[in-house]
Length: 273
Image (cartoon, rainbow, N blue to C red; front, side, top):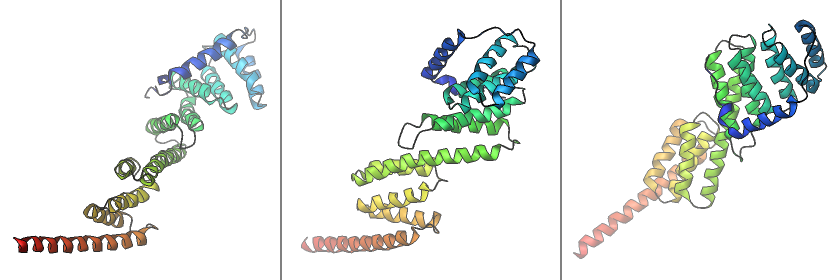
């Protein structure tokens, strides 16, 4: 199984987790119970959704019974407790530990999926920085590669699609902002990014339309004709197709008028000579 290094790339997250554990370490006490009895107490707390108490017991368990058969489950349930307490940064770290420390465990598959889900939960609205959105995509893609036969693959792909739509929307709205500012060349950069990277999202046909329109507004009629035709070829059934066809016909007429004007001016110039 591929090692997942996504989480460890962000230093401030690692620091926050270290601080968290330093704060908790002073509270840990040694368990004198047999491993099975200690584990039964943990499961009882977990089932009652007493996650904070379960976290303390799980941390003790992982210290005292590191070699126990339930150690992989303890690591996974520790991540789960943090997840259900909505401590997604810490949860991501604990899920990653489950995958890295117990790659052959039955818990590894679920942990790798939940790693992606933790990043997904941290993903903000589209207008903000999308570091966690990209991390979620990366984690879910690794999950699909590592566990292609899992029943969770379909859900992971849906999460990837949602994340990609969010990234596409961010670029699309940036492009529209440049269009409104009449910075048409800059707008086309973002429309092209969407057409290249997010061609399967709902923002692709809109980007193609606005790209063509930007050339029309720039009076670059040959490129406008080219891009409107490309829109109609690729997205002929899109809801904006009628508008695209009207725009194309208008641009073709403008291009014809321009050609006729140039021809008259050339003839007049030659006549004077």
